[in-house]
Image: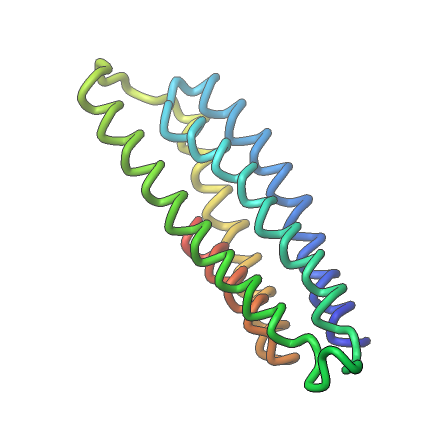
Length: 156
């Protein structure tokens, strides 16, 4: 299988898993009375943005060299990796801000077991996505897949 097809395959799987996890965590957070799990579910939805960046970028960085790009289009993959890193940093800032705001302005409630179950399932699934994405990224030497793999690991 061509490297760019491997990138797309693993990333499309991650995309759909992130959508499923989002729905699962948002519902689990609502039913389990956990603002943190709902926020994590919303964050999983934003993970699809980096998946789309990797998928779209793979169509460009796989192009062969041409007159305008005699060394190929590989820099696009580096640009996608920088985008993912920047996106992760921005997401971390928003989550930290929201956590501080929640602590300062809301009364503390005890989440239900369904919220815990949603969090545990999320950890297991995201770690699995990390391992698979990291393995494929190493196999084909893709910095974008490595960045996206670490995105899964940080989510776990």
